[in-house]
Image (cartoon, rainbow, N blue to C red):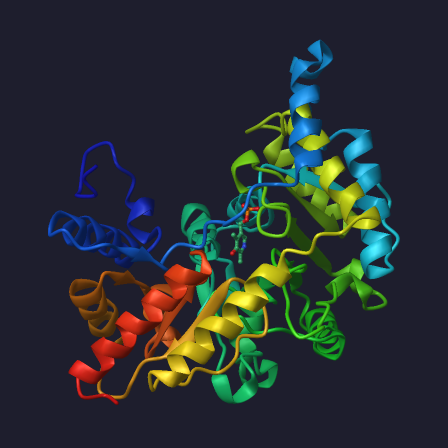
Amino acid sequence: MSSSASKWRSSRLDKLGSSIFAEISRGKSEARQRGIDVISLDIGTPALPPAEEVRSALASASMDERNYGYPGTQGSERFRTTVATWFEHRFGVKLDPDKEILSLMGTQDGLAHLALAVTDPGDGALLPDPGYPVYQAGLAVAGVETIPLPLLEENGYLPDFDSVPDEAWRKAKFMLLNYPSNPLSAVADLAFYEKAVRVAKERGVLLVSDNAYSEMAFDGFRPPSVLEVPGAMDVAIEFHSMSKSFHLAGARIGFAVGNREVLETLASLKGNIDFGVFQAVQEAAVAALEKDMTDPAPAFELYECRRDLFLAELDKHGWSIPRSKATMFVWAPVPSGWTSRDFAEQLLESTGVAVIPGNAFGSRGEGYVRLALVEPEERLLEAAARIGRFLREAGEV
Ligand SMILES: *Cc1c(COP(=O)(O)O)cnc(C)c1O
């Protein structure tokens, strides 16, 4: 599909996504045509199928004739009650299933529609830089100005709220935070969320937490929910995904929790756009959450092993990368003298290893690349060996 100007193409689309993703995808096709065996560490698609119990629940719910009506935007009572039980089990936070939980067609659905639901023309929103590209897409569709919230390595990739100008706070309707973070793989603790809630209250902005990787942190760390902070419910909502932690990416289900007014507003917009998540898919999510409470099979174990193996191997080949703390991503500083894009392009061209240049996630991502640990261990070892050869040939090590 062409992205060039067309009579029937809104200029809003010009602000969507980053062309870098398309370039990498083209680079992969070209490499394959040249006979190169491509190792895709670029896109973060989950590596495993959902648990058998979850697939069985989906299968039997799909045979139930009653599950084929319009499901409704809010989500079934059974789904919301199960989310409430899981949320209390996992975070110790009690939620009202009728008012404080909303089903979503994936977190993406909530993230992309939020700005349309809560902003007016002339508003802005604070987005992490670097950050997940969908945040920016949601603002672009709503015609809302992006105000970057710089995330710097020296601050552990947490924002410095004091450095945000007063004018930006006045303009911002909401502030988006994403920990554990894609692409940074950084984490936040409860003390950070306490500060964020205080700042959101002082400044009168809605605090939006994207907790898509809550179940995917390493070295024993259990990411908190922003709603664990007393009083957070007054100013915050949080998005949760079934995609990464429970391997249900293709089923498209997630949920939003928190401030009831904001959830009602989001639901009223969504009620005009979609009619909810297929009930059989909600049953699959119920099965996944129930299994997590009785017989957990945490998704982080797989990625923690891969991280240890891959980073140790790259270290042997002369590229030392800070240990990622969470997620399926490794955020790696490129050797000095390279731009992110040159490094990613040349690595792909000469080795067939595909990674994403950091500036695809915002200008503060320059100087880094993101590698996704979505290939099996032997492929990751092969990728590390090829990267090592590339660095030696480039005279980097
Ligand atoms: C993958 C991802 C999502 C999207 O999750 P879905 O529930 O599949 O829509 C949201 N946020 C971040 C940071 C992600 O990496």
